[in-house]
Amino acid sequence: MPAYSIRVFARISLIACIMFASTTIAFTGTGNEERSISVSYYDDAAGVFALKSPPSVDGRQLRLTGTCSLPELTLKVQNKSARVPARQAVFRTGGKPSFDFGYVCKDGPGEYEIIVFGKKRIEDLGMRGLCTFSFRLAAGETGRTEGPDISNCVLSYVKSVMGTTVGSGECWDLAQEALDGCGADWNRPRAFGTLLDPVKDEIRPGDIIQFRSVKLVEKLPNGGTRWQVLGMPDHTAIIVEVLGIKNFRLAHQNIGGKRFVITTEVNLNQATSGTYSIYRPVAGITK
Image (cartoon, rainbow, N blue to C red):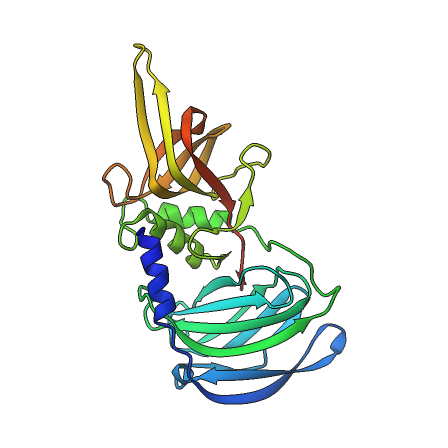
């Protein structure tokens, strides 16, 4: 089983949500319309997490303000009125006792359910439920949007960890830490953002590429060939430079026996088998 599957299963299996209190609060939405939101806290929120003011919605943004002694919060967001998967976005508190951040709602009008999870340590695999609430976005309040560009944040993170081992050294760990640290909105394990067409769409540095058993065959000047396989069966990398059409410089780890972040060039015009997908990271959290 690939490492990312093990990590995801561990996260899910360790989630415990035991409700200990429920309060009803109100907020003012678009057009100064008064609405009531019932916020239910779970046992694990006691003493470590609380909302200081009611959640509020302004256009596309849900705003959360409160106090937290945990290093990381995860929002699970689902528009229950739309046939789309739940989204996840991570906010890291940076050691500050209070938080004030937004989440970009992307799935149009409908009834949204939010669950806020927390972790005692960023490296922990398990998460604990802290609170949950629902709200409705009426037609016209928001449409589908990808939010602000976070490519520069992803690239800055990659530069900061070059030559080091991220997580357990698996290739997927690099993408996970880049996306979570930048507040990306993505669905584990491999829906890293907006799926791109590598032929029709412009591919940019900061995009994430997922390989599945891609065999590359290079013809050498002496008439021989050299080949390599990316993904046995899966491999994840981040594009740091576009060298040409289907030709990239990648940052990745667990490649060529090296379990630390390096860069290599890959020319996908040399691919003879296998598949690959390219994703544009999508912003979830805004400050």
